[in-house]
Every structure is written in C-alpha cells, then in structure tokens.
Image 1 (cartoon, rainbow, N blue to C red):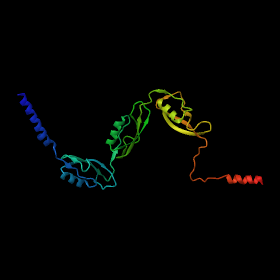
Image 2: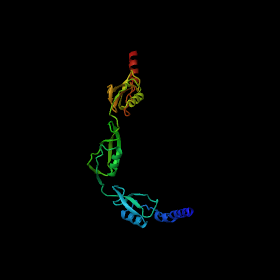
Image 3: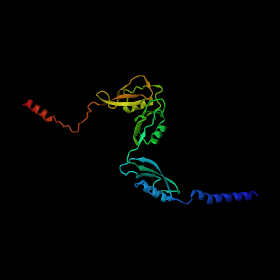
Image 4: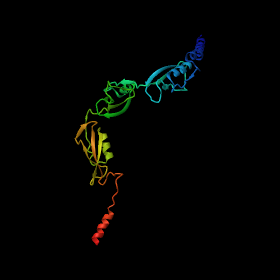
Length: 259
C-alpha cells in the first residue's frame, strides 16, 4: 500500500515537472528582443507588439542627438532572449528638458538621500565629509530643496563622518617629517588641513615647522594647518622669462679694474 502511494507520488511529481510547469512557464519558448533604439516611439511600439512583447515608458530625457519621441535606450537590451509578453522599458527623447523639484535630503542617511535624488531624476555628484556626530547623515546639499531644475542636474552632498562628539589630544608634530606628521594627526582622530610650504635655511625640507591651532585639545575631526619647510632657494620659474647671464658683465668689470 505505502509502496503504491509512493510510486503514485513520484508519478505526479514527474507529470507536474514535465507537463504542467512547462505550460505555465513557457518552457523552451523565447523571444529575441528587437532593437528599438534610434527609431520613433510609434515604430518601436509596432515592432514590440509584433514580436509579442509589451512596453512601458520608463523615462523621458532631452538629447539633442535624437529627434523628439525617439527611443534613446531600452531594457532589456536588443538580442536578449526573454519570455513572451515580457515588458520592455523605454527611455524616450523629449524636445524640452523635463523639470523636477529638488527634494529635501538634509538629515537623511546618505543611502536614503541618494535614492530620493535619483527618484526625482537628479544626479548625485560629489560626497565630501565634515565632522558631525551622526555618521553618514547629510549635512548640506548644493541645490536647495524646493528649487525647480532640469532633470539630470547634479546635486553635491556634504556628509557627516560621525566624528566631533569628543575632545582629543593634539599631537606635537613640530619637527616631524610631513608623512609622519600626517600619520600622527590621523591617529589622533584629527584631520590634515591646508599644507603651506615656506623656505627655510635651518630646517630640513619636508619637515613641519609649525602647526595651527596649537591647542592641547581639539574636537575630534578638526583640521590642522601645517607649515612645512622647503629648500630656501626654491623658486617658481617663469617659462617665458628670459635667462640673464651676468658673466659677461663681471668679466668686463674685472678687465677694467686690471687696466
């Protein structure tokens, strides 16, 4: 009895796997996606429908290389094999650049801010970091929230690095080589800010002469300005300037004195 039920179960599983499931999943059926880029939306619609596919306009962008209502991009791309009735997402060119309202992303997490900007058709630009308590939180955005701008506009973000919640000891980096000083500053939880070079006859090149602020303690993440020695005779050369040779004048003077 049990053996018979077991055999029947195996038979039903085989039937489902070989007959029923392929019917529902269109097994061994596939459509090659046609290339509908660089043609009009009407032509693209006709090609996709005739191929047994659906479509949806995913985005509209302005691109001077295409006429209005021409297809700029598609997904999936051409020549991929897909199931019948698959939806193809199209990006259509528009004669007028679409506008969008910039969302408020200050105080959001970096990831959430990026998603919000991208959802509004904006481009996330540079990400610079400043000291603040809440790590990876947006402190400022380069384009004000509520402004109406062209889609694709770049928005730069200033992000919190999570520092700035405690005081740290400032290392004495005077007299250290520049690379050593930078490492000491970073280990202390501070930043290396501006580096200025000054000619020195007494201090070896690339050695820290002084730094500011020179307080015993600073807030974690603050930056130090370093004054670093360079060769005393280091001069910026002007490529177009003439080279003056004084040797002739010196020799002439010596000859006059001898005479």
